[in-house]
Length: 103
Image (cartoon, rainbow, N blue to C red; front, side, top):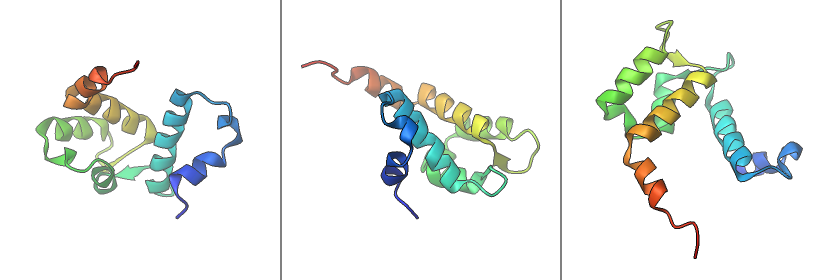
């Protein structure tokens, strides 16, 4: 498959895009590259994109709640909710807050 960086470079609208737009496009491309033809991710594929998370009880609770149709798949909107939820519940958010942004 084509590397994500090369896929991003091919999106002309991102040429002058902000870092936030590029970050969102990266998430969307990773999702699209892993989704099935119907545009959904299986729980197994979701677990492979977020290694280690599947062992956490809160992860299981969130992903089960997002899988409303009990098909063991989630759509892009639910994937984004999952990412935001995991970030808010993890140490990652605190680490992000501690990153130096100025010299």
